[in-house]
Image 1 (cartoon, rainbow, N blue to C red):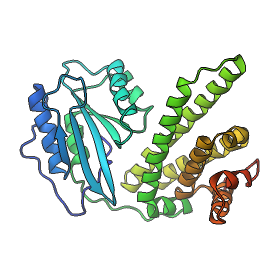
Image 2: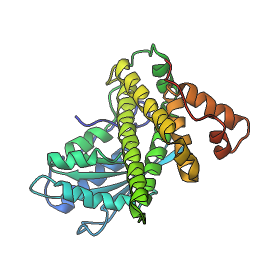
Image 3: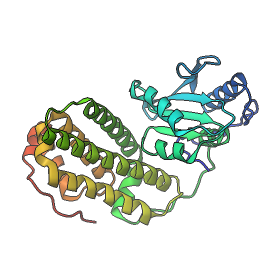
Image 4: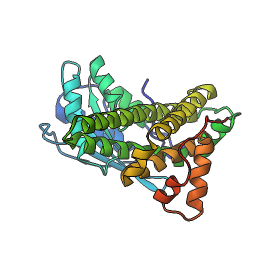
Length: 305
């Protein structure tokens, strides 16, 4: 069953009488997808029965003070959608930074296509049935009361944490895109660039894991121990990044801002420890991000709690 990442207004129950959850021609499938989004409270703009030269649907909805914007690409293939086809669609999202996520809807996906999608925090693959489940108003679940400091922080900061994770995901994607365009003029510079790319890919992978774990925990689908482990793992990765590369981080304004954003995720997830305290104290003191980071020391110890 697909993870339900969309939340409709509390108490609102949706029915989908006009949306047939099956594949047919592009007009039939696109009409069904449009109906599912409209019944979930989205304003939908569609490129009627497109020939794959662009996106098929744009769905927007105000939620919790912000705007959710999704690009929805529909693939009416008789065979499972391949990894190469998914990568081609992901290229759309890289040039459409104003959208929250890209949703690709198809009859089925190959295993390699699913693996490719897991590399991107803002990409989801769904069948029509899974799309219906994702947009339907879920039955309220009784969520266990958090017992740990991390669990309590994740529950209290649910909205802010999700927003900050999304912002960090966009920033990482933009940084990776910029790094990929660099053309170093020496072997040493090439090695440094490749090491930075590898670091950001690790960070993105850990961020995707944290996003999934917190969403499952807040939906009542995961136990607290699991989300605590994932939160600590992400924070530990951020701490190790600083300890091994603080000079490189301080050398570029974009990297400093991205690191500060990562620390913000750690803090909201309840596992920032000494790192989050140091950065927050410096910023509260009125220092710019650059000065704050330069003044917090070269090494952070292990995480607590």
